[in-house]
Image 1 (cartoon, rainbow, N blue to C red):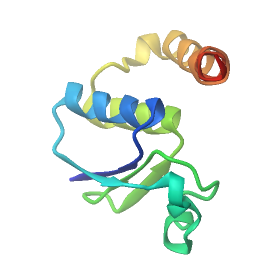
Image 2 (cartoon, rainbow, N blue to C red; image 1 turned 45 degrees about the vertical axis):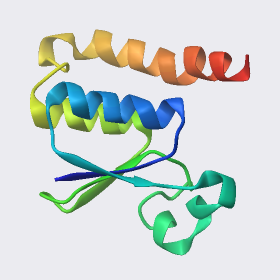
Image 3 (cartoon, helix red, strand yellow; image 1 turned 180 degrees about the vertical axis):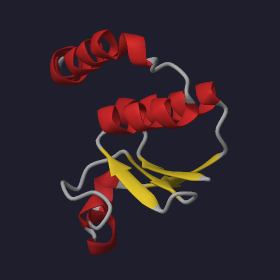
Length: 108
């Protein structure tokens, strides 16, 4: 099972949307970023930059942080939305969303 550590933010939502789309069973563990839960020692162990989202794949005993890395991991693991033949194009658009589009919309 996948455990999603997230807050009620667009970055948190995009992972739950992916998990729903690939049909994986998952549990959401809320992180109260307004009360600085992301800075607790136990959270920093799975998210070194104290940011959400993070997933823990309990099947493989791995934690993955950063939304783009999580989406790539879930795409590879599920075999959905991340075809080998399209990865260059997918990665370009993913990085554009993470580095340009997402932050600009967030600032707006």
